[in-house]
Every structure is written in structure tokens, then in C-alpha cells.
Amino acid sequence: MTMPGQNAPDGAWTLGSRYGQGITEADVRKLLRGNVLGGYQDAQTGIKQVNDGITNRLNDFRDSQLDFNNRLDLLEGVSGYCSLFLSANWQLAGGAYRRLPFDSQLGPRKGTELAQNGIRLLSKGLWRADAHLTWRPAPSGWGQSNTAGQTKIVVLYADSGAVYTEKEFDGVITPYGPETCAFSHTFVIPEDQKFVVQCHAAHPKDWHWIDGGTVKSALSVNKWDSRTDNNVQAPTVPDGGVLS
Image (cartoon, rainbow, N blue to C red; front, side):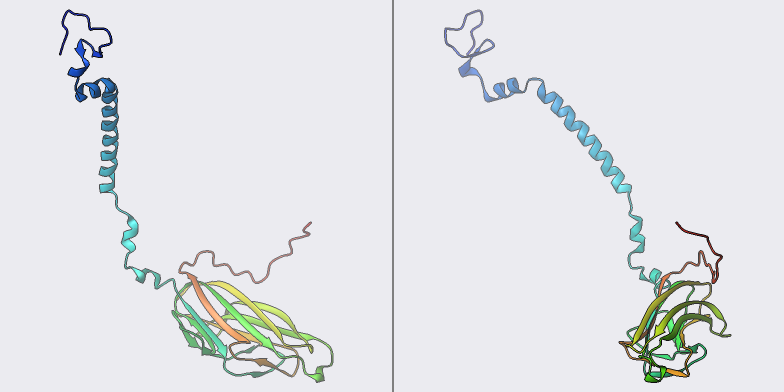
């Protein structure tokens, strides 16, 4: 109902020139929205354009890591390991370094071979060797004095036996109980299948015992990298002065 040219009766609910009973739900919604809907629709349009742009970029995106799926072969050259122990206790003659017969394998091995009472490294790169050695207590004939017990990890040229690099551990043998040394040597080898890792030991007496077995002896290697950067050999260095 409308009231053209007429004043609405007192108390009548009107919207513009129309009586309330003639106003539909759609009229009210339109009134409430006013100009807000237009701005909201513009915002929706802008968001959709941004989302569409991102979606288009994602369609062109490819994760390069997918190239490495099912490519475990790429790790073959990096991985290498072996662990040995002495299968017997040995009476070691003194006066010079003696090669210890690490001859028994513990666990699997990879990229290595058992050779020359040690471990042959089949590929070049950065390796670490670890040794664990136990001297028996000094016998009563030595009295109450201590004596030197020296151990070293030696990396040799397999063909010639010449020393390529080595790491020493200087310890003591005492009458008060067994003495155990455990140490490591990290090194770089430049060629495949050319080098063997061994453990040598020495003392100044006529003879002395070294214990074997998985508790008191070990020689192991682990490969860390196939690169040969910074292959430094510096067995001796000059004095550096006083640190304060």
C-alpha cells in the first residue's frame, strides 16, 4: 500500500512513502546492506584474483627434491663402515711398534674389506677411525713403577706398507689395574682401494699382554664424505709462543 501525496497516519510504520505492511523481506535486506555490499563484493573479487594468481604459480611449481625419490644409489659412495676386534689376547714384544691382528668382524661392513690385520678403504673421501685397546696391569717383576704404553692408528699404502698418516696415543701401564685407551683419527684419502687402516702398539719392556675380545678391543672406521678438500698433513708444527 502506498500513500501518494498523503501524510501517513500517526503511529504508522513507513519506509519511504510505503506503509509497513507493504514492505517485503527483500526491501529490508536491501536497506540494511546499503552501499556495504558493493565494497564487500569488491573485496571478494580482489581476494579471488590473488588466490587465482597463487594457484597459477603453484601449478608451475615443482619441488626439485622429488628428483631424489628412489635414488638411494646416490648414498652408496658416501657410506662406509667396518668394526673389528681382537679374537685373542696377545703377548706383545717390546722395544718397537707392533701391528695388532684385528681379525674378527663385528656387525655388517660396507665400502671396506678386511686386509692385512686391518681394514681396507674402498673409496676416497673423509674417513674416521676409532681404536680401543686395553693393557693388562704391569707384572710384579716390574716393581711399583709405571711404564709407557703407546698406541697409534696408522693409515698405510696397501701395496708398499708406507705410512700415509697416523695418530698417536701416549699412555701408561701401571701395576694398579688395566689401562684402556680409546681415541680416533680423522683423515682424507685421495684414491680408491689404496689404503689400509691398522692399529699398532708399543712398550719398552721385554713383553706385555694386550687383551682382546669385544669388551676390551676395537678398531672401526666410518666414512663421512666423498670429497677430498683440505687434505692436510702436518705431523709437526712450530711453537706458537705463550698463551695468556
